[in-house]
Length: 64
Image (spheres, rainbow, N blue to C red):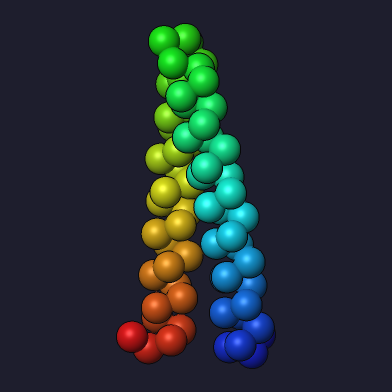
C-alpha cells in the first residue's frame, strides 16, 4: 500500500478511535457506581492504547 494511502487510513482510524474514546468516557461517567462502569473504563483504556499505537505508526511513517 502506498505510504500516502496508509497515512490517510491511519488518520481515518484515529478519528474513529477518538470518537469511540469519547463515547466510552461518557459511558464511564454515566455508569458511575454501577457494575458496568468497570467495562466502560476498560474500553477507555483499550481506546487510549489503540490511539497511541496509531500515533506511533503515523510518526514512524512520517520519519519524525
